Length: 637
Image 1 (cartoon, one colour):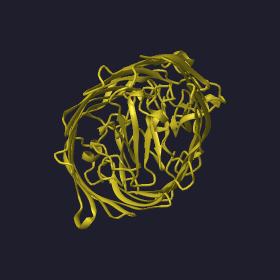
Image 2 (cartoon, rainbow, N blue to C red):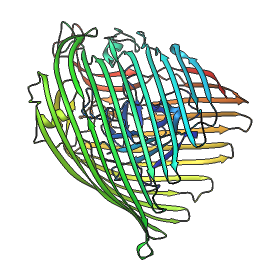
Image 3 (cartoon, one colour):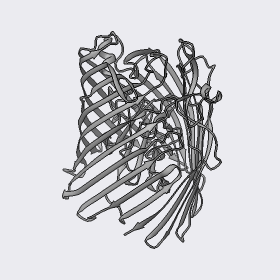
Image 4 (cartoon, rainbow, N blue to C red):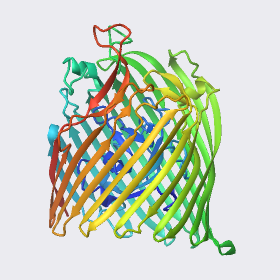
């Protein structure tokens, strides 16, 4: 996959590795938090995919946020736990060269799940110095990491190995353990031809306290770090191979071929409603997903100057196949009671696209294109107690158009106008169960913005956006059923700035405000309304680098009727690194003011022992970590 050339929209972000190298926690999510308006929460023991919030979307585990690593899709289709499930824990942050971010459905290279935005982590080829670190801190947290480049010349290589463990602040320790391995090689086969290949392996297991009902904490039944069912958690692994081939037959032509393959396993245990459905055994569920995923992307690009107008023409094709076997079962203490659903799926997509990048005048640029997406679903059911018919084959298709207009620069200022349609695919089981429903619902987006450097040492951007999502069908993996939702409307404004106050002192910050509602007037639960982030970073010439950061999430509606509130939070973090010759020391303090906050929140009905059989509607939440410290030493060699 080749991302659009910068910059086609005021909301595009390109975050270099230097901006997140101070953060020693080893969480890929920390990189994404630098994107204006992108909020991330973890709500099960560290090993489950994060929950993503962006542009008025509660994108769950990735339904409306497309994530890639060097073009390899992170999101998984027709997943056991949620559509577009995007677990980033197989990414070692120190191997990332930069993050490219594209908000909205305006970019022809991105298809499925790229409605609120698409983000691609670009990996390093080498490290300038070999590196090894050992870190430890609060909650029995340990992290060991090494990165080294055996060769850096004609053949560029990189190897990274990571081990991480943490119990978290919970009364029932998470025991979260993960192991990551990454290896990459890149070489120039000829003067005009490059080949890059990398492979990675990740495995993890953990326990989680889950989302606890607020009423249980208020009544003193458990503490905010307690659990109703401490058997939640799971195990997972993911192995990836990613290959890129680039060829420039002439100075004005480029051919790229990108191929990838993934083997993935998840065994997940959740208990959301406790004793609502089964008063004897409880409501524990087990979701299992085992799949192969593979794909091929090809692109041809040609530069020309018809009538002395600069024109870059691109034509591409993307193919992807997922072959998940998905199981949903009831369980107690991690032992299966009965299978609710057991299906095998073969899901394929074929996506041709064309793109034109035209510069008719020095102050005018137009980037436009179209893509088609054809989806083939083949579902075979072994066990199914939901009442739907989950056997059959279905083919669905849709077109999408994109247009981006750039005016300027005038006085180091550019104006932008963007339009595009996009989509997220729905779960194959939903599509086969009800063939009249929309399988690939339309997301129609508009955006207007400005970027400027007219103020010395200052960059600012301001963006107003609108996004309408057509009727969609959501697959509820926790129940094995489908839920139809009506059309929705979202709009908002984003402001971001970066100021180089002194040669060694930089400030960056952003504020976003958005509103999201269904066409019925009902609120979109958990959609962010106000977010803010600020960071002050000092890099002193004698080896000390330090960062003081703030992040804010305002209160949100937790239900469609706007009766329930998901509480917001304001957090402060500080990090510091000091290097002397080949030795480096680092320290990180998170939640500096020890704020009691809720990291993830949901409003639904559950039942505790002794409560009415109909259950009790309540806020359920995962508590955020109290003040925590992580420190360590590293050597460079």
